[in-house]
Image (cartoon, rainbow, N blue to C red):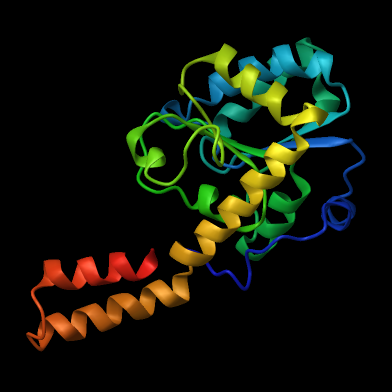
Length: 224
């Protein structure tokens, strides 16, 4: 889970001012440059997307795989898109809510994952998400219900999802996604509540009050 006192929605205009963003729209890529993250697919999609959306800024947080940044920047420069990218590496964790709140969408395309904090944090901050369509992610989100799921190596599917994010006629749909995600995070991903539940579980099992499976079932039912 996450610290929901820290990760909460901020006004987009205020967040944009704090980051000195002048572009109309922002796409956030917070996971760096690495093979399983499929950053090459993301950048390929941006080459196609940005010429049609010149007022969009892509924020690349690239602590992981930072050695790949110069090569990526060179290719972006060749396409005349340098002004559409901002590259940052080390971001203080407490500043991340500003980045999420300034973004119109957060994108993560990992081919394999557990439970990515960036997804939970973005959802907590009221930022729509485009996620890779893999089993671990589908445990938390459903495409068309509270997010867009795309095959992690499918550029066209990512472009289609981004087009839907920036389509003004989808505003009500996106607002509903945001509300659903905030509700889910408040119910299931509050780190303070979950940490206490784990402590209680350990004590109850240690005392022999319940069989572990029964205790876990109680906790699951209480969330519904």
